[in-house]
Image (cartoon, rainbow, N blue to C red; front, side, top):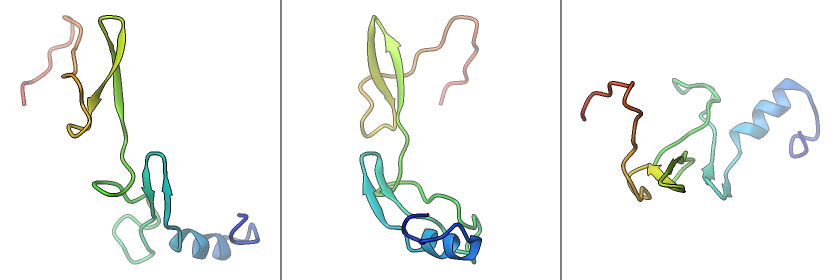
Length: 84
């Protein structure tokens, strides 16, 4: 809204489409109006990524994505997870 200078939908959309911001969790960009995921967040290598943490042995460790994982995810005994 600040960059668009308005709360008008068309101006907000225009500002979103021009977004290219490098933040702490990656580069933030949005798909355009003609893309399959209209105005959705772009994600993936070099762009926005998530981080999955899990408590293991009293410590919080990264378990996803593989590039930063320090351990494999562990499931409780009552969950039957398929092997990858």
